[in-house]
Amino acid sequence: MAQHTDRKILRIGLIKNGRVVKEHLLHKSAHVTVGTSEKCTFQLSIDGLPPIYPLIKVINKRYHLQFTTKMNGRLTVGSQSNTTQTLDLRTIAKEGLSKASGKFQVLELNERM
Image 1 (cartoon, rainbow, N blue to C red):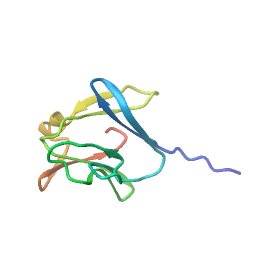
Image 2: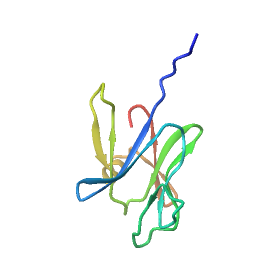
Image 3: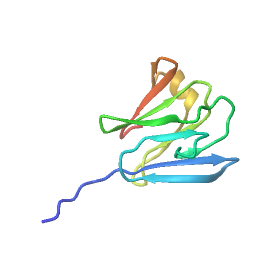
Image 4: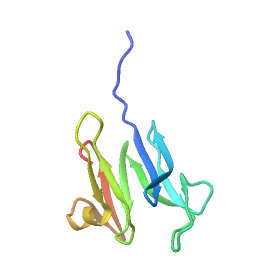
């Protein structure tokens, strides 16, 4: 008999001026990178951004969002079967939802995040 497993899909998008300009659906655990390198998940040209920046890391089979307080962005959590919530990165850091790790803030993404 076939075994059914509920697989989670990470949906990540780059939004500019209110429009989705690039989107990825990750069906398996993989790092998400941004930067100037063609090897990045999202190639961006932003002052101060390194060639490759690990925005989302996979640690022990769990996603971790890694950001600085200088970054702008929003995180929407939830699914179609329940309510969603959108938080901006500065609020996540300010309210202590993320943990300081050196010069970064790290937020483990789980069922609630």
